[in-house]
Length: 108
Ligand SMILES: [Zn+2]
Image (cartoon, rainbow, N blue to C red; front, side, top):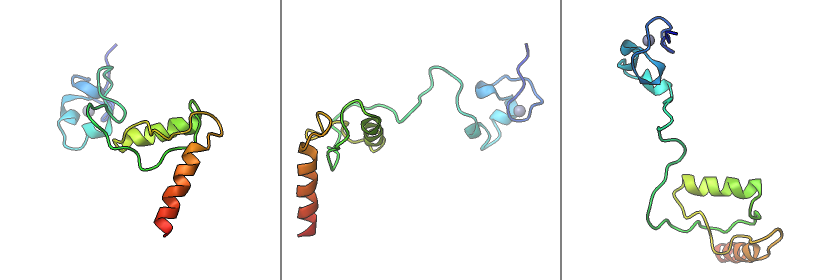
């Protein structure tokens, strides 16, 4: 089976990302096609070191889709994934108390 370039659909694939030589080296073209390699970096990346604490704890209980979204957003912003006052269980009042404290500090 001969793979055909994903961009021009004419030439034989002989460069990464399923592209032909001409398309791969044409400025702007390879950026249109994500890497097909299983070794490629994906997602928001990883890093070591001390990340700043997120500005606010979350009321989303552990394991919930809401908490997952919060973690993804924190990772994207390169913040620490865990806030010490994050809800530990469904209905945990701890983060709420902290949020109210922060809000009233802003208001005064
Ligand atoms: Zn091509």
